[in-house]
Length: 284
Image 1 (cartoon, one colour):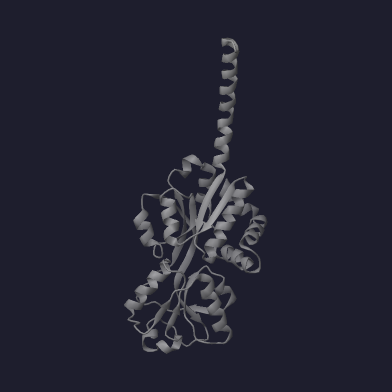
Image 2 (image 1 turned 90 degrees about the vertical axis):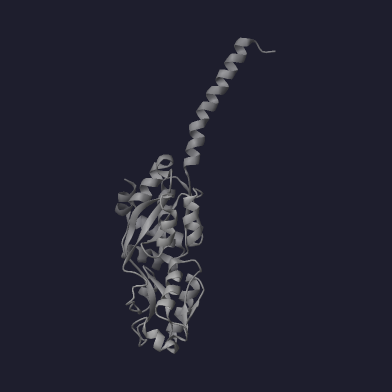
């Protein structure tokens, strides 16, 4: 049987040990970061760059590909820490309106973004309105990407606004869309795709956007970064990086091109290594 004095000393030692562990456990939790992204080339690039920078700072980073709807919802519910792929004000405008006040929009990480319909330069068509009188010029199809993507909603609206009743919007994915474009381009066949800038396809092939006189796809957009509520207080270093992150079309497209030759992780790591001053401006 323990005496009162010995018992008290053991309790004191136990309490002290537990108290010493609390900061360690809290620190470990703070080092876990969850980011979401849609599998668009530019968002894959930016997400992997942020992941690389955070991992270099000792964080355990998990990135998960999801649909645009799940991406916004996950951060609004606080299930994930943030994302770098908010296309605004048009493409993800509805999502932003729905979740306004439930997420932190940190600002622009890339300016000069654009969405629309694109065709190869060899095609003798320049405007979306021309598709009404000559739907056969594109085989009566527009090759789209994943359902739920903002650009798909805008394209459905374009079909209505331009009265393109004889043209079908084909639901696909980013990878399948570019694969179809590649095959058609190599054979000089007609094709029209849902497109956006930045994207590596504009560096690889000679493409042009179709004019959009009704402005269904809006003007030039920007890509923003979004964080969950409470991230600034709980993980200030992570919040600071997401808040400061910004780069140019050229920088983003460089990572995208490298990703075609290697994995997105390898491309991001190479870019981060070769641009230390740029990265330093984000983490300071």
